[in-house]
Image 1 (cartoon, rainbow, N blue to C red):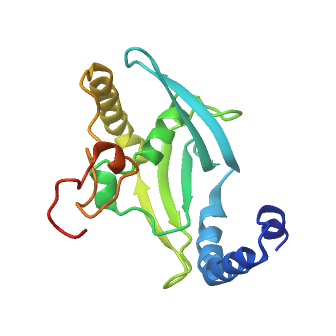
Image 2 (cartoon, rainbow, N blue to C red; image 1 turned 90 degrees about the vertical axis):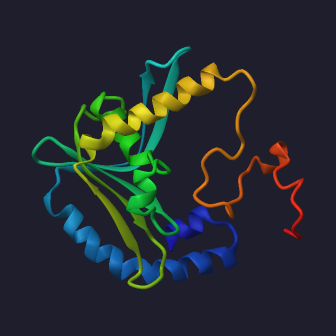
Image 3 (spheres, rainbow, N blue to C red; image 1 turned 180 degrees about the vertical axis):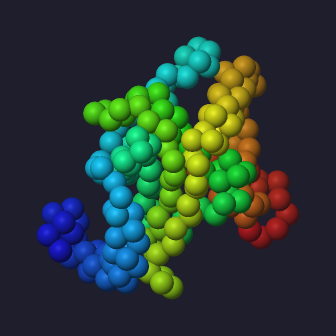
Length: 196
């Protein structure tokens, strides 16, 4: 209640969030007991960065929601979502690189005040307040997939740096019904015959 009072000025919005917290609290606490059963320390909102070997030079930055250090010298990375976490299919298709890129930064020793470490696992934690209260999409052996995801980002950045005719505004959406922040710039839909 104190955190909500400190962070949210509008009383009505505080009530909305208080109700959501009440709906996911039991689920979160049960899951959190398992997460904290075997760790050396937990770090929240940790800034980090690493330089990628992509011309003309690119710095990847992140603020990890949470990194736990495990007794075996590895780590776990968690990302909190206010909505449903991404599915395994969305992660596999490359729509959610966040945990993998944070694992790369961690392996390179790029997070403030944390030693370089491999990420044994990662998870997106959706604090939805629906169903059981929340949902988790877990990525085991996160470090094993990091190089592939980092390579995909490098390929994309290389393609962008070589692009001379502008960028495609609707390059990779999950479905045709999805809306992009840049649709108005690409004049998407201008020549459609439907009422949409």
